[in-house]
Image (cartoon, rainbow, N blue to C red; front, side, top):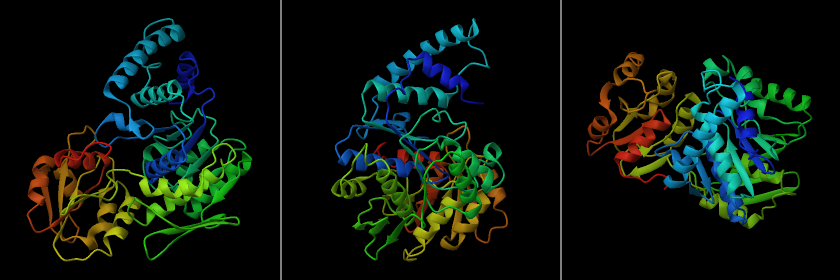
Length: 411
């Protein structure tokens, strides 16, 4: 894998990145929420904003938004057909023959190209791109952004990114560009050291949480952001969870670094933070159903922090489904104190682990573990009329529960 194919294809398409103002966001957790907050604040300031995120909860259209609105089925269908035909022509031109395994673009490369072309054609004022995986070799990493962010670094996708925090941080810091500001959230020291080194090598101004800017939660659920001699107090936050204050701090700081090109007023910052939406993240779908997209240990810690102050006035069921490559045991260790039982499940996704396999990994957990089968069956079993059900473990599972309970994509 590398960037040469994607670079060649974008050149063939006429350089959709040319002239595009970009903010680039990486991170193990929180990058999607950060993109949504950035987009909401910039829209409140009057800009035409494109957003590219991944993966999607329910519909692929969610990944490509302009003005806060998903690309339509018709536009996406037309665009993908056009790019599929262009891909054949490009491969023939590059190889002198038909598309083969060495040249064919991946699913993510194709949808990234679609997003860039759609944004270029719709003349967005700014494109906010979420890294798909890692950073250095990610298909989005052909941009020369105004600024970039690394929201968090944790142990996830270790087979692709490396076995430790330093290795993963190095991959994520691959998005750092010479001379372009990079904002980082609260990071483990092992990760921060690597990013400091790479930023220094590339003469990229580095703004660290707790060092160069600060966020402080208030008793009202709002927060204060401080940077240099500038302080914004009593800022609202629509997204639930204390970890979203860290993400919001990254987003506001990132905007401060591009204020000469994309000025955003304090009123727009407040309005945007109050209006930001990112379904599936600590989202109550019913009085007895909470869903979250936590899919690694760090995400489980954030979910645990959210659950801790909630009243234990009813039994709690952890409805857990995950991809086959995830360390579900490390997640459950974090979540176990908040639950009375675990029901394992799987959704209809090719990467989903079977409910029985997840249960086997939890054999020594000190609470009842029940393999509950497919999510359609498991959600009905879990909702017994007296329990709080928390469905988590993967973005795909959260999306499946939204489908079953009738929540609309993008709402």
